[in-house]
Amino acid sequence: MDVTDREFALSREAVARFEYLPEAGSTNDVLVEHAMGTDAAAWPDLSVVVTDSQTQGRGRLGRSWLAPTGKSLAISVLLRPSVNREPLGAEHFGWFPLLAGAAMTIAVREVVEAATATAAAAAHAPSDGQRTGKSSGKKNPAHNGTEPEDAAPRHEVTLKWPNDVLIDGYKVSGILSELLPGANGLVVGAGLNVALDEHDLPTLTSTSLLLVTGRAPDPDAVLARYLTELGRLYRRYLAAGGDPVASGLRAEVAELCGTLGEAVRVELPGGADLVGTAVDLDVHGRLVVRDQADNELQAVAAGDVTHLRY
Image 1 (cartoon, rainbow, N blue to C red):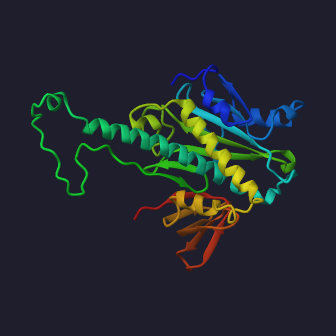
Image 2 (tube, rainbow, N blue to C red):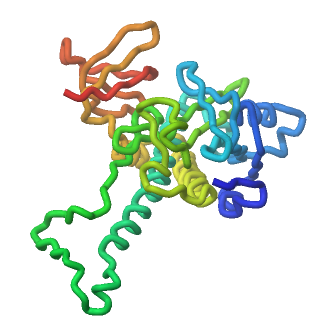
Image 3 (cartoon, rainbow, N blue to C red):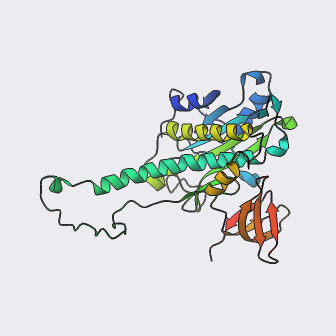
């Protein structure tokens, strides 16, 4: 993946300000510093800092998130939400990580679906022998509603609450949001595994766009899609005054969320575990879990979620 400052023409069009860094310790730290510094006015709502070489990135729950040079993107977006020129109350901020996760899910899904469609078209293209009327020696699959053996595999791209993006259950992206001092805005950081091979993966439950699709996508195209979707969801949320129900975003995010309907174990702050079935997202963006111990509903604002497979 060749990422240089001369690229990202599509991504620059999607946001108010765009800055690519050849290397950064943490793009979130860089953007927070800009947003709170003497030149803060030059960093408006929907300003973005991106690198393909992050050396001190952070994930949720204190985990590290590193971006191997040229193989991943670390993306930070500055949000200064306001409604009718008044700052949006911090009580509405819980939805921003979910909106970012939804935006990344949509972007990744489009990349995967496009690659799958291309592979399927290639698999069904006539061979040289077929073009000249010669038999390939292969039988055509019966048109009985089943997929031919050489069909391109279909992949499931979903949002894992609160803000991981999974492909077939493997993590391709994670998101970490940080409040600005005074809660007058926030920075939404995202890491995306673009071209990592099997030896680069940080965990056994990780994957990359390259490993799933067989080729690394244009980083500008996938980044621009993410930023465009995030802007769309963000503006819809603000247009509804920070109301996830009136904006329709609660339903849209729930539709993308593969955690809903799953048996889960949630490691709660403090060390306790909640085991049950994830059934809904409440109006604050919390995960609603039906506790298997007493069948009661419990809303979870923070926690490490594991999808259980029985």
